[in-house]
Length: 304
Image (tube, rainbow, N blue to C red):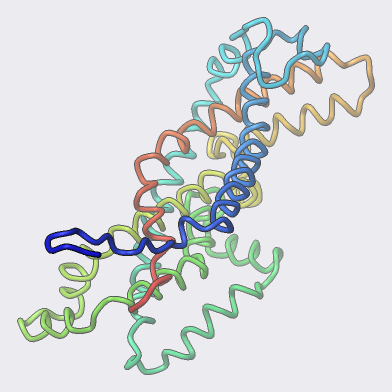
């Protein structure tokens, strides 16, 4: 019998988070992601450990992810090389200039393609998609860059890779997701197309722009083949080509026979140091743009 004033608890419903299947999924998902983290970090930790270890321990195969015989000789040797810092400065300049140009071109192109009323829009999209799957080839590109007078200049590194079609399509999808009413209201207030883009669209696009900056900056920072192909002067090369030359030197020493084992190991240690010094700037920048990156890659995933 229920008396007046007695509180009756509502029946508890079992949500999806309490189900046995969901708990198993979380456990499996955690284990798999931890495995991915280990597989991803292990090679880098090994490189860091080798760069800080004594060569005797490296030759003996005793270095894994923990440095043995702490030694900074290789760092001092690399950092005392003036050409390393010259190539490092070139990489910074190339990355900053190339990323800026790529962001401007990709933003303008994507914004134009996001307008359904644009005449010739299917053709422009088709041109972009065609270049995503087909290219003119290495020799025609080399002849074109040389004939335009861009060889041994920064433009040989920047211009040929200025627009990534994948980034273009991602940015186009974001612009299409913005409410048309915002642009219509801005047009009524007297803004032209450029004013709408600069004062309305771009302030709302910080997440996707930060994501594209990260994509382009990492790509240009790690790129070496374009500079290796179009630049002959040592003082104009990026640091990635400097690293490539170290790797080539170690490979040549290794192929010369077991008598050069010490040279092979010394070259391998210098490689490890150069890899660490080359990777550190990206590792330092990434935490500051991570929140924008997570938001940017999810753009367009949920609609409603």
